Amino acid sequence: MILYPAIDLKDGNAVRLVHGDMDQTTVFNDDPAAQARAFVDAGCEWLHLVDLNGAFAGEPVNAAPVEAILAACPVPAQLGGGIRDMATIERWLDKGLARVILGTVAVENPDLIREAAKAFPGQVAVGLDARNGKVATRGWAEETEIMVTDLAKSFEDAGITAIIYTDILRDGAMKGPNIDATATLARAVNIPVIASGGVSSLHDLTALKDTGVISGAISGRALYDGAIDLTEALKLLKD
Image (cartoon, rainbow, N blue to C red; front, top):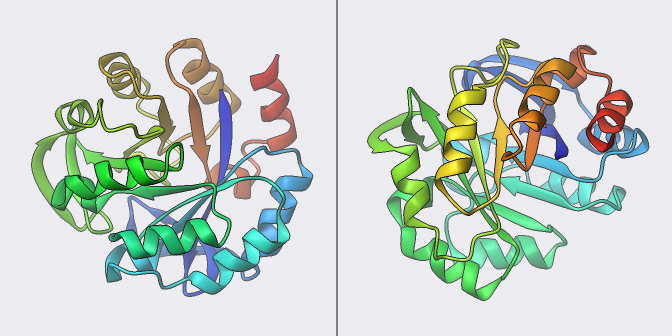
């Protein structure tokens, strides 16, 4: 199971939100590239980046810090937030991103998911963010009546490389991930599922790994707060 340290970008800073609320922001580093390098120095194999402003604006906003991270770090990175057309997808991949994460368009323009996955094999993931099992879009500001599992199943033949599943009510709250819901989703589809939201201890990582069906986990606040030691966590997941 791969551990993806998260760098959420707001107004050029590395931050964490609580429950996706832009008004509940903690700035952890005003130099996101330096933060990324610290994660890489600790041994991480991937980085997970989110353009929070972009998720609300519907277009990239924090391009400069993302580009600085890509220039500074030799490990692959995935990015979500404000990526909603082929031109933006292509531009980011050309700049060195290993993978784009498409979220809102999975609901609003599912044909784009299929088109992008066909054009860029292995480089397109879908981000499914949910409250109580129902998908939320546009930076989690808009809720739908679409069930996560139903939407995930609709992309089984699209060729996407992963699903990042976030339980919004767990995100940034340090209360542990929704292991049951994540494992249920992973068993329902043949697409690798990455857990996000609430991953806050080595115990959480062990529990996710022990399901045997979850391919990765994203953690942010716990790494910044020191609740998870990244080097120790990476060793745990390799053993």
